[in-house]
Length: 226
Image (cartoon, rainbow, N blue to C red):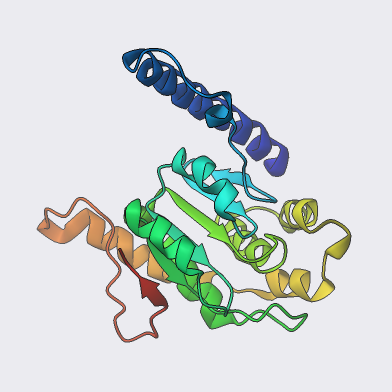
């Protein structure tokens, strides 16, 4: 049930966002004489694109034809789960839109996903300063699916719903190793990190308005900023 409720809410949120963007563009078009090229209205999402939560998205690797679509998301951050360097054209797009890139290199093989890498990526996902945010690997199936699956465990989804969501995007390419990894993944470590954020947020007299994570002794991801 959790999965279907999430899908219904995702569709509703996505439709609201698209209506808002459409209205904004129509208003901007009217200010400039009301004439706009038809092709300007064609927005192409990346392969396997979907909303995970409000302000959190997943997909396969975007190409330049998807840049217009990504602009509508008003992204602050991207989590990139591949080892290959981010293309120069994409880095320029991120720089021009002030989008921060967090790269966590995971090999695109059938081997088990590294737990420490997932932990570090989840720390990015529980920090509200990074939203709106897009998670992607190459196809948006295995590496992205494992990260989202571990997030769902943190959200107390039952394992059947975690598997169903993973399989929806992986299709016939679903990997038993990925599902075993999600089953075994212990969210206690990231949950303790989340508790530390909450304690800091409540502040003990602090005036901070955002969640901060101060575990500076842990390995850091490769981060590229504009």
